[in-house]
View 1: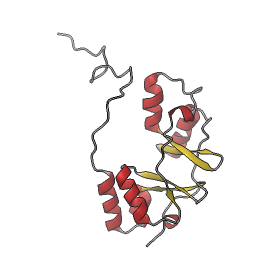
View 2 (view 1 turned 120 degrees about the vertical axis):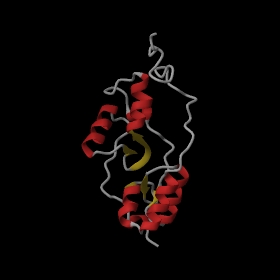
View 3 (view 1 turned 30 degrees about the horizontal axis):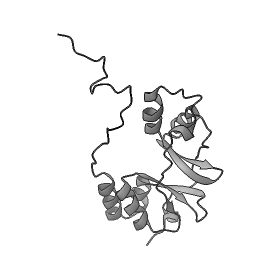
View 4 (view 1 turned 90 degrees about the vertical axis):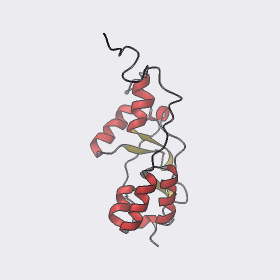
Length: 163
């Protein structure tokens, strides 16, 4: 069995909780990625995604230059240890339906990222297919906490068709 350290991507870009959302978005654009680990020093404390920025900040009218990553990041992050097996990480990714998993050492310092793409090119094809199938299982969206900007489905409260 291969360990995660054999499959993960190293040299991962991270952000500080005090970085601005603008800096986060710029990092995502420069690296063509949609999520960035958030670290306090070297310790993983969260993840911020392009979706976090859009849903938790832009939709709420928060300014990108003065809103910090810590205000919108997900703090309850799923992660794995670098010495765990790929099967364990794949199971966690499937259960959580996530495509990217931060990898930490036993002191919870960020050492890499394991992405579905890593599995697709470095794992055997059957293992990669099982991971994709489990991760891609449709789930019911939770729409109980819609933003004030959401209005009626189809474009907001002002998007009425005229007769």
